[in-house]
Amino acid sequence: MQETILNIYLIIEDGKVVAFKAKAYKHDDNDNIKIQYLKDHVKPDFDSAYTFDAPENKKGEFMRYNEFAKLEKAGRQFELFEEIFSEFEVPENPLICVTPVVNGEIVSE
Image (cartoon, rainbow, N blue to C red; front, side):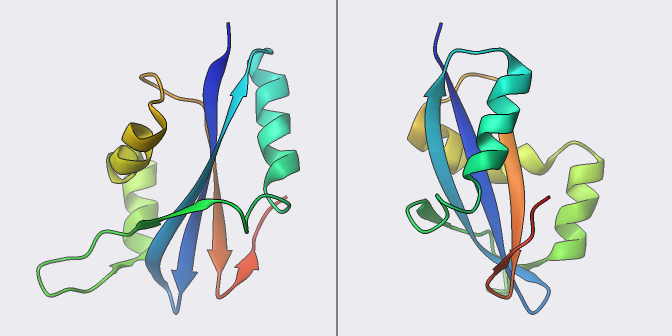
C-alpha cells in the first residue's frame, strides 16, 4: 500500500527558523527503503519543494533554532508541521525526514 512520505526542510537564517519547505512522495516499500529514498532526494528536490510559513510569536518574531531543538527533544516538533501534513494529506504518524538549511546551505548526511 502506498504511503505519503515527506522531506521537510527547516529554513534557518541567523539562528532563526524563518520558513519550512516540504516535498511529498508516494512510496510502498519498507521503512528503511523509504528513509533512504528521502535522504537520497534531500538535495535534488530542495528547489522544487513547496514553501510554508514558519511560526511567529506575538511580537512577529521567528522561533530561534534552539527553541525548535527543545521541541524536537520533547517529540513535539510535529505540532509545527500541521499545515504541511494537512496540505499533503499524510496519515497519522507520517514518515518524514527533517533537514536543516542553514543560511542557504543544506545540512545533510
